[in-house]
Image (cartoon, rainbow, N blue to C red):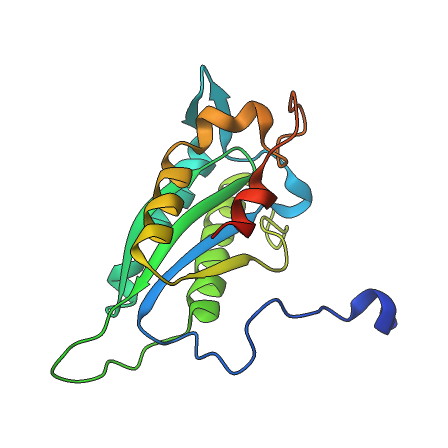
Length: 180
């Protein structure tokens, strides 16, 4: 059994303190594969060509509202080693729908997509996803539009993407995120 080392094992939360992540609203989610391994297909001529694992991931993402009735999926893209998507937690004007927080939805998404991929690979328990994920609370329509466009055009920028081990230049993702 591995010993606990607080310098290595203590993960700093990137979540907003005191924020209720089950609140209605839109959330921009990015999840990377374990060790950034390109598991889901390839970008060919600026278009993502998903393999079978990529198809499993896309189907699981698109089916999230079947399991979480308070949830809508919006823009989504699968890349060779990560995904970007927008999840929208809905509210009902007649009553407040108290649903699962984003963290639980992402955990379930990662668990069930991993299980399906590992069944096919015959590699039960092998990590598919990184331990955490990145999220951004979308606060206004302008931000939503920029994020939506970013997601849908992501394959066009793969040659510059910081997640691309063969990138040609520097990605401006960090500057773009700071502008939200």
